[in-house]
Picture (tube, rainbow, N blue to C red):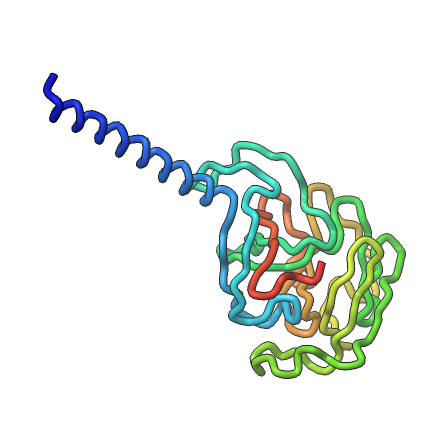
Length: 214
């Protein structure tokens, strides 16, 4: 075998190994990390309109790279986590915070959250750090800390809370989760479409342009 043919075979092997490594890295990235751009004000002040949001695609399930088909399950969403899910009866995805899981009860008394009969505590901010955000985020004037015991985060509160969670304690059915936007005044969430099935929850939000407050 000539030195030239040997060199060509070695080069071909190196190219094959390099291609395999690249495909493997792309597969891992596709199945573990994703990036979205937020559209709409429903999760402000945690996620603002236009923010780049990083998600962990392998937080709950193992999915086939590039296809999204679930082949394994090792964890479930926990209250306080912000998740990416498919909106019931729609084909679009949304970000929302998990408020309660299967078997828990949830209620909104006015604009105040009650989980398992325990009212969340609220702390008003002396000065809002979001005074200069784009007007389209519609933050309003009441930004407070919401401390539900196992998780705490900032919310935009409003007195007008849509049904069905207002003033009525509801139990979350098996295999479902109640999700709410942190902007309670401008959010299309479980108050409108009900609890979200576990199968519709895809990713967990882990960060973005600003790290989340949890």
